[in-house]
Image (cartoon, rainbow over all chains, first blue to last red; front, top):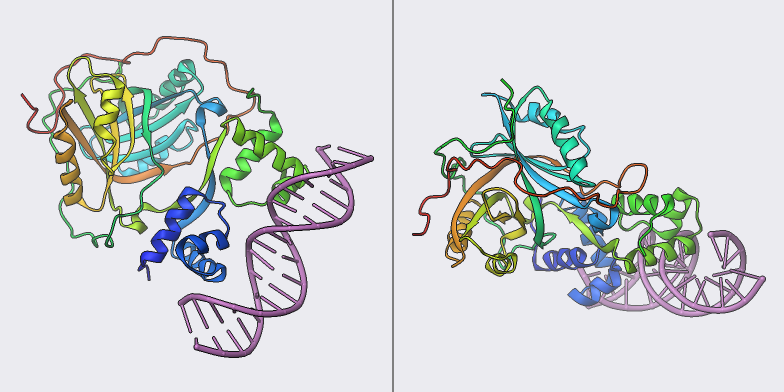
Length: 181
Length: 181
DNA sequence: CGTGAAAGTATCTGTTT
DNA sequence: AAACAGATACTTTCACG
């Protein structure tokens, strides 16, 4: 179903660099004809490897000058679904993950300015499931790669291995004020 | 230099949804002719609002099945540039930020599997500037929006307000084993 | 900003290796 | 699977109004 050969990987790499490249251009770069490239791209999309095409936009230029990562702390057994429904609906949240470690989740938020960030944070903390938050404001972005194609040979097929916190001695971490009772 | 009107924002929104949409298509959606759309897109690119176009790829489909966020702790006065040069060159790092709070930086890494993640982490911790790390493995991705166009009126021109940790009482946070002496 | 014309692409269909 | 050739329809891009 989803075996990518070297050609597929080079096509993907080319489309990551320039999502508007023509099939002919890509073909020249990887040594295929335009129709052959199209066939492969169609297959990559059907297989879910390529999920779409998008403009790459500078958030700051659109007015999003402030961003932060917020660790979310929930009550004992809060499911991922519950966390999801708590953070969806907050338009400032651009990404959210459940994570190992002390916090239940990590959310990446973007705001127009500090004031807006504070409002968004307040609104988030009003969610029932959320007992506490810990915010780290982004001071500067050092790196921001879209993604890298896996080097050399294909990816390992997930050989199991336990997930879990990579070091949990909860010595009481600093959290945003007012942990709800 | 960078004043976006309603039309510009709708064009950007359209290109975020479909980066390969033709100028004619976009024009129909926003009520402009194809050349008018092209002129605006050219201007948006020249102004740095649109920095490029890219395929949107599912990392898991390319073999990146494991990701984590790593807080990086550095010695007292380590500059952003030094941190940058410490984390660049590690291909697993897909994003890196300097942040407020206890840690000096937060890096987002992607690996093929847990074993690969461990190797990357070890390699990172070998950097001279890095004294400790704290890793949170991503268990599941709840949300992953590309970006949102700012709602309604234009963005506020940054009304100041102090940055800084939003609650720092360092009660000794849990870190990855082996904080270098 | 729109119009219209010229050059370049996309996409389909066969045919051949 | 892929290259190639040829047909049709779109797209891009550049004049000019």
